[in-house]
Length: 149
Image 1 (tube, rainbow, N blue to C red):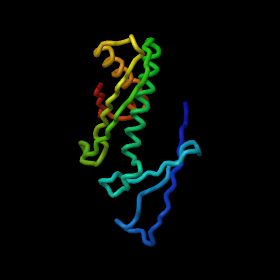
Image 2 (image 1 turned 90 degrees about the vertical axis):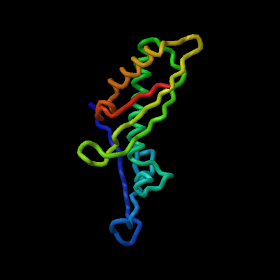
Image 3 (image 1 turned 120 degrees about the vertical axis):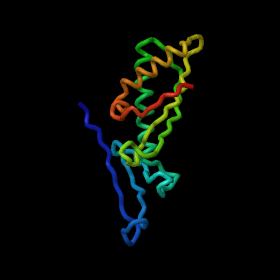
Image 4 (image 1 turned 180 degrees about the vertical axis):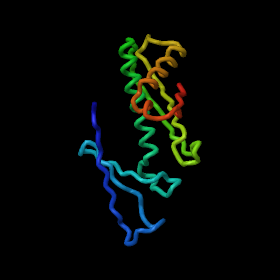
């Protein structure tokens, strides 16, 4: 199948490399075109103006879930007009006592063309199918919650 890649670059800016004295800020390059500045989460000393790996993980899940939902909705003949999501990654300790992203919550809002509607149950079933078929969701554990708005 596909091999997908990024390039990551970090360069120390401080004169001494020691605990608590260096920045984790680095650049991730996508497709040799787009540079994203990544850092630790703010709770871990990162710059809040940069993205962090936990946000990137939530973004990957949200994007994958949306693309899967759109493919399933198109197949079902549902005329989706817009899709919005608010994804939130929760940090905590996993059952092994290690820090991890313990849960990612998705809050999708789907709008359809005027005159088309589905029941809350049909929408929930389609969101559940999207979750089950999403590549990223299948990579993660069962720590994803979908809260339909």
